[in-house]
Image (cartoon, rainbow, N blue to C red; front, top):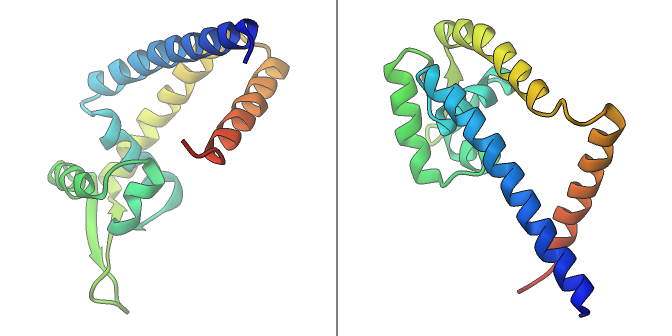
Length: 148
């Protein structure tokens, strides 16, 4: 490894970390202003866009420990945004499903979230966004194949 490789890797790490931190802070503030935490929003967004999901699989889809999902779904259910539905074919499976109230909430909230993301990413031209997407995807896939 050369000094140049080391410096550019460290700089890339810092730049990615700082960008992630700023974007994360902005979106978290938006969620909090709307009465949610990021995990609650992630669950609602999954159910809003993908339909009912087995509770056991939600954690993998939003990158959260499965033990936390029950707690989050309980909170969302208490607010009337989500309901649990038993599987008609397998008693071991329970689904989380967005309620009519949850859908109404997300119909109002999601477009505003999307607009915020567009604004946060507006510093990049469309072709630059596509290039960044491909490069970060390439980086992520290459790291996934490494074993440390």
